[in-house]
Image (cartoon, rainbow, N blue to C red; front, top):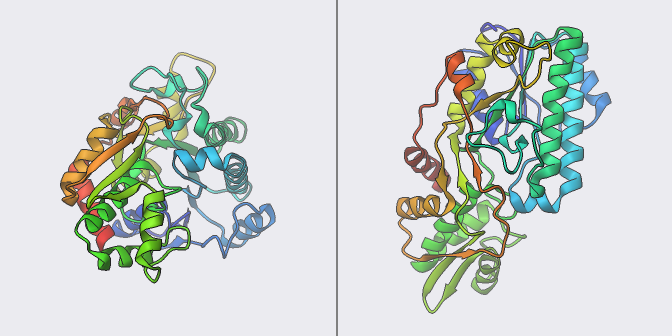
Length: 363
């Protein structure tokens, strides 16, 4: 991949894709191809074929996906499996048909079994049942891994799959119904602090930027309090509580999105499928588990994460854990030894990353 290569970033406006665009731009790659979902529906096989036929792409970063937290995954199960399968099937197949030199497919560590040994090694894929709430999304991502492997083995393509751990950073999704735990907690605590200080200017500004169920800053204070209460930001006797689903005990690993993007660029530039196949299955005729985990190898409990965010934001209220709600998998820590062996390690520490993300959010 050189500075003049024609590079398509699918999903360039999301958390993952925008970080990859920034990383490539910073490194001097200027021939970047991007399309919004309005311009190009990746679920449409005809539209995707026409796009690839026209653009004659050299490299593809497949970061487009339908994503969400535990509530969204469990509620919109059909949408998650259908849309993700359609997106990746169309892009991967047309990358083969049009002769793309290399493709990087991004998945998630939710592909591993619910009771997976820790830390999770690539070889643990398909060794046990998945966690129920995100099973449809995980199955779609597993299909993407196997599709890349299969095209490589049958057609000699150079398609690589990477499985990032939980990501956070600029352009994250802060929708309180559909977001992942870290951005959801950050927004709840931010609004909780504003509520305990009676700062309706901040609350109105936040709701104008990101309305909740159609409630924006123009709504009455009563309407705003009602929707905040529904999503676990609760004012009672001048004290504020922030509700957190689950027990707070699950352990989660978090990776700064810009570190993830740097890993993706590194892999695209320096790593080929054959090299990964040799590292993954050196003594076997069966080539499998050629995906690469991207993470830190360090985790934190949800309860401790909440306290870290509370301290960072300056919230003085309390947390209320709804332990009757699902926790999801209790521990999800990636083994990143394969990636280290290939030559890459993360840089951003969690505390500093949250500080930077909060600064971005309040701006």
